[in-house]
Image (tube, rainbow, N blue to C red; front, side, top):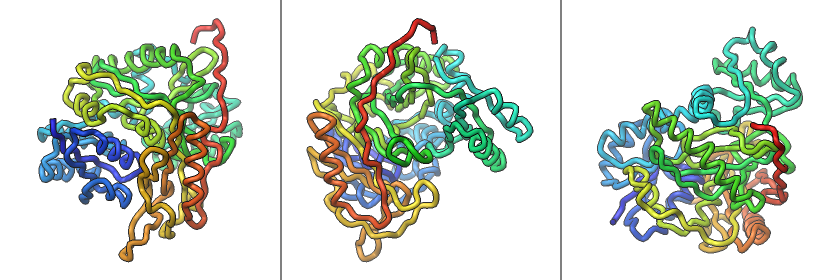
Length: 429
């Protein structure tokens, strides 16, 4: 099978998707739209508005795509996959109905309740007059979320009631409903699963680091780094997540007429009573994807095309390389607030170095004089691969040391802490 793949998106996740697709011998061409300078080293770049379904469908026709892979969540929630699929192209990405699992936390909570999946207790607040009374029913650690898409930055987790109230009031002032949740204890796990209706195929579990500073300090971000696999996560817990969390949710979406086709991301806390869902996403997570795909040893396009065409149950389970992989995010000055952009980046010119490290572009641009400059909050991802986590970390941070961007910052502790999962008690979750 010869496959021409169109990848929609412009970040480090899409850079990782493109590299994984290029390693598949069946792939004859990769076109990325709109892409970025790093992606342009490995794929043909074409301009497109990812949120314009008509433009994406037209581009798929122009490039004769055999498979369209939609990376970001916003186009999926807006229904771009529906239009491209209706135009006759196999699409890796869920319908707008199914993408509500990420686009509406209230919808996700309802799906989980019917499916019998453990998650945090929650309430939706849509009026400032109700906020104080609702906050009184939560704590001593408050979890305050934007009910819609917020790219990981619409969440505040705090023991300070005033900070929780301020965030909730700000969201309501912007016209966004507020989701209050009870705090879930335990380390977090990101599990990506290829989902084709009720067929669920898990990929490697990873752990994201959301806070901007070392030691999980500072505000939440879109993710400052991740590592995989998780030596502290028992195989039986991983199986439990697939059987008791992802499969019931996939089945419930089918029952509602919102069958999922694409990548279903389960973010979970592994507490004393076992896994509980923090969130679901309707696409590959960023920055976990960058580490997970660095270890993939199976033809990537085959997996995505089988999912997109309803044949996921017919292909072999993914194979993985031995060892570990880690992603470290290099962020611009002042991220995650208002990041400074337009600064020249040096030392990242090598792009992808097979085997040990990868430099993936997240928020970059190229000036007329060919200089690489920052163009976003998360600017570059450095991926290290090694025989174990220690070696992967050493390689990633050594590569990062050679990259210069004025005012930039990164976490020095990605994957550094060995996490111990609490022993289960006898209380049912």
